[in-house]
Image (cartoon, rainbow, N blue to C red; front, side, top):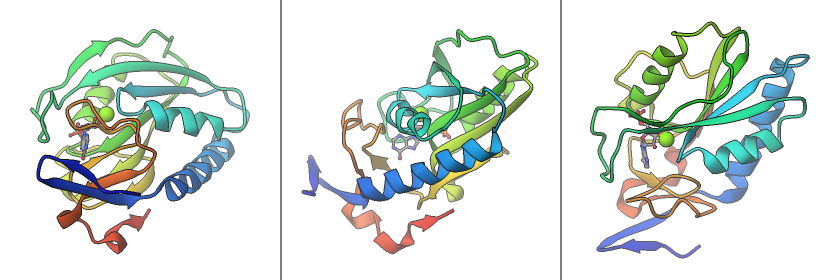
Length: 189
Ligand code: IMP
Ligand code: MG
């Protein structure tokens, strides 16, 4: 896979497509076991989770429903603005349902904290969080992520849903800045 150049920056593959897909298959199988006999609602946080959500539900063997809401915390920058805005509300009934929040990446944890507070205004049967990526060293809020695809270093990544200035979401692999990554520092959780 050719590096991606953004100005002077070179991004190289940190997680290739096959590794992402293998892990999502495992997560799907785990959720299938954990939610056997129930009909969970997968709630994707837009925009970043759209590809992960799609691949995750394809690997979930059982009845489920899906919905999306749209949050914005980053604006168009590489660092978080510290504020979360809701740009599209949830449309599903959350009361008495088993909710699975689907996130692309947990960085400070602010978005998930916002989701917890939002859902706490209702009475779901249960709520769990699945995130493809997690930057454990960046966490600033006390949030519990129940299912994690990969723990990654505290570095900016793009691809597979994750953007830089709204671009690069369509890449099949996940890239990081060349100088930022040592490939084997990416650990499986
Ligand atoms: P948090 O609210 O600080 O946990 O940040 C979560 C959101 O910020 C994610 O859903 C992403 O949309 C975005 N984000 C965090 N880290 C990155 C990154 O490395 N690349 C692209 N987007 C990111
Ligand atoms: Mg996101």
